[in-house]
Length: 59
Image (tube, rainbow, N blue to C red; front, side, top):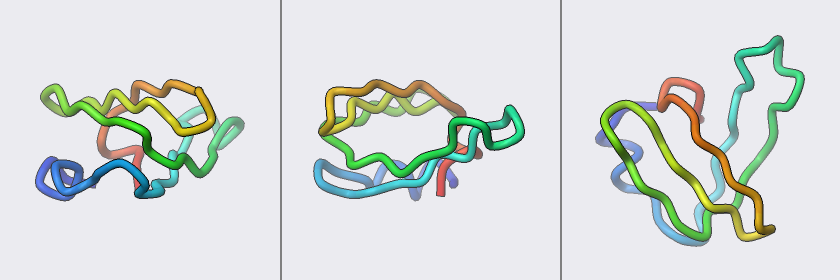
């Protein structure tokens, strides 16, 4: 995902995280909040989870 794509994400959107560790923990995440810092996304999920990842790992 590009920075421009990520900046268009909002609460309620769903993204797929491709875990770079052979997909071991890949999952869909429903966004509660998202912050873009450079090429990193900081996502709080609606289920209470938290993910910090590179934008290239998101679909």
